[in-house]
Length: 151
Image 1 (cartoon, rainbow, N blue to C red):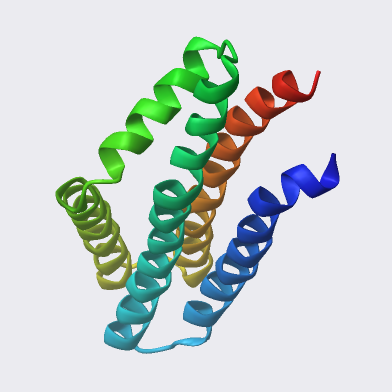
Image 2: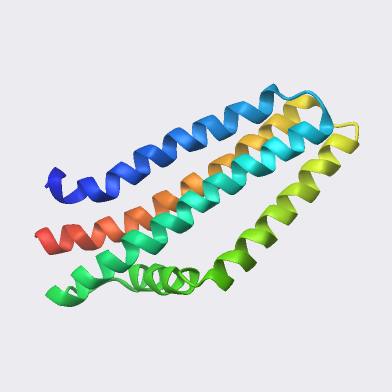
């Protein structure tokens, strides 16, 4: 069973390392411009890993489900359909540009106002953990379908 899940777990473990690194590095920056650039770069790297994961593994899982006629829940079907939309470069560009623009605007306003550094760090951590939760959600919906296949 672990061997069947290994192709899905390896990207997750690598992504977890990237998220931890992305969450730690910007906190070391003390100047506004460098901190915002490092923050956006770290979040962009996290979202790129998610898009690559979605583009590579979700279509493979969908093919397995179709080949064996596995009945999926409506939530799993929704995730697969959203992943199909995200496989298009224009979809990836629009979603990632919108999210990173909002992230950058909020983070730069936090640096510009009289907000404590701990509040900025909490926001940074929150925005770093969002991609992790998205990947966990996508992975869980796919793994549930794979468990149905094994049963």
